[in-house]
Length: 124
Image 1 (cartoon, helix red, strand yellow):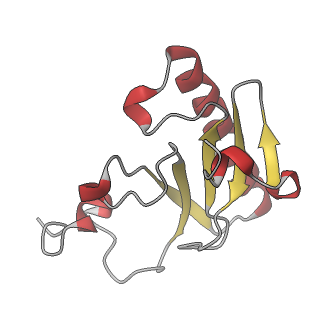
Image 2 (cartoon, helix red, strand yellow):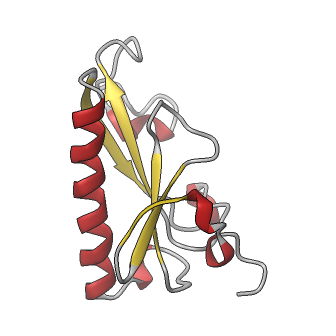
């Protein structure tokens, strides 16, 4: 895809890679250390990934999680998420997985986590 940001990423932004995927720091981080894991192949969303791509992305998620926690002892949790489709908020239509480090006290009430993407649905 000639106009896809993630198909033409500046190599200087890449912080980790394997045969099928790479990782960058999010350009608009939700928290310090927010990263994106991106398959090399242009595929619209998570549901189009092959089994090998899923495993490659998972390997980067796990290694980056460990690295973040080694470098920052204040990180005690993570949100892992992706948007699939415009209705879900996807704006770049090349699959990417958010790895968002979380710290005690970064929000007043963390209960509900990703359920907060729809206002009023996170508290239960």
